[in-house]
Length: 360
Image 1 (spheres, rainbow, N blue to C red):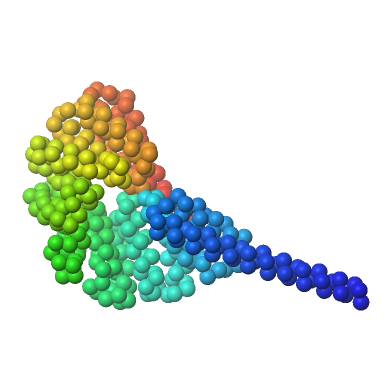
Image 2 (image 1 turned 120 degrees about the vertical axis):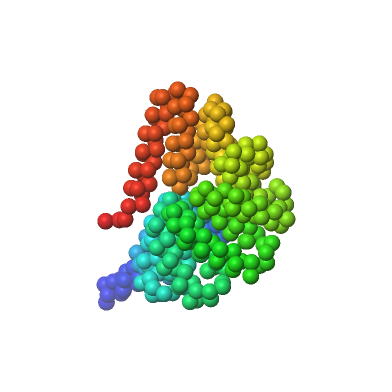
């Protein structure tokens, strides 16, 4: 009788220990998940990433499915995307989409939203064809759940247009981007910052086709809208000025380009905006176009230094910067440095292909 009672006590203790460990782990998942959400909303991305990692570790120790498994995977992907780590966000969003499909079905709103975010990250890392496929799948889902004129649908169409432009599908891109402009004008009015962003995107499509006068028209309208709504020193104004300066350079209006890019640099350098390096790149291109290669050399070196402190997920853009830098170095008869720069270009393109290769 005493032995049976002892066995019962041990059994009860084991059950209590298992319950405490299981529920304690579940509690830790919830606490760290909630903390990561708050830190992401606050823009404290390092703290958000740390909390999400702790939540994931607690989830693994839990040893069983949790209602927070899918939300946590989506959250981790969003933290990486927000931090500009799109190369790591892409596979995590891929896992999130697979999990969401299994639980909610292929046509659920949750799947549509996750596909949109995956498409944005694919576009950012320079995989526009894959992005187009993902975005073309998500748009009908979003239209079905939210309506064809919904802001989320317009955002997905906007990102589709960007990807189509990157993929040199210019007729498709222009058609998509004009639809976005019309949707946003109808929803918010002609002078809305959302319209300004859509005009900026259309200008890039025109610029890629060397339709510079049309690009300049879009940019001047976008600039006027942003200055009226946001003030002359807002970072979004600096972004438009950077694009404007690039188009003016292509028109060989170097003085006007200098004015636009200098103003963009002043706006974005203090504190350094995430696109500050792009302005330095634009100034380097201007100096090279003017034949001022020593200054271009210094600016490209500065651009690469900025990249080391603020790594970009778009390895194609970085590779193109390095190619332009190599051309400047050759003109300065710095052959060894130029050759090394081209080797870096090859490594960057290889790294991108490896990172984006489908899992086998």
